[in-house]
Image 1 (cartoon, rainbow, N blue to C red):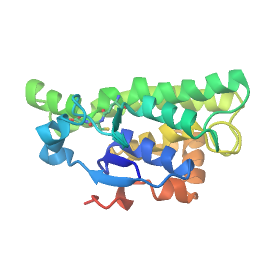
Image 2 (image 1 turned 120 degrees about the vertical axis):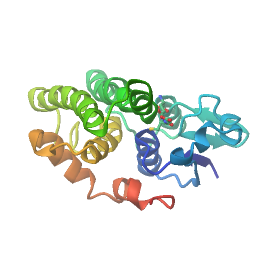
Image 3 (image 1 turned 90 degrees about the vertical axis):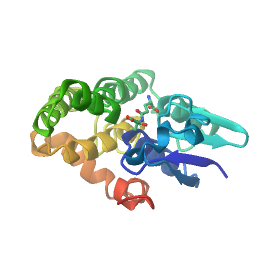
Length: 213
Ligand SMILES: N[C@@H](CCC(=O)N[C@@H](CS)C(=O)NCC(=O)O)C(=O)O
């Protein structure tokens, strides 16, 4: 069985948990507590030198970087696919994943916020403003894309979950944690509600994890 190094509140761990569940794969969860800096200790940096979760142990190999791990999953376990068949639809789904994974998540990552707090003395109000700005900027564009492109159904693309939903749902969870009003983005809110009827998404949620507290 594969070992997943994960933290319940980590968005990138969350997206990987969803992808694994949609592929029907059961893995052994090994919690790495970011609050106690366990990810920066040699016991974990010996696994991932970047000191970031998630990581996936597959037999003797360690896989890092959630986008690369999800691509590996897609190539190793092609069914059910997280990508549509049509080549432009594949681009569309990947562009949503990139919007979240490259342009929203990284600037709101814990280590960035800790640096803003520690080096620039940002208070919690300023931290919320920072996170809110980048989430709003991304979600405003995504809401427009979802409505304008007319490719979304009950999910970001059509009526089955794809890579786009795998990336989106953890970001919605994070937006709620940063006290964002999700009613500004009704299409995103509807897709989130639909995903959260599926056990694959429900069981991957932060508060469902054994390390949640
Ligand atoms: N690009 C990496 C980013 C991983 C990442 O940023 N993980 C966060 C949790 S969501 C982390 O470990 N942060 C540690 C920290 O910020 O101190 C991936 O997608 O796997």
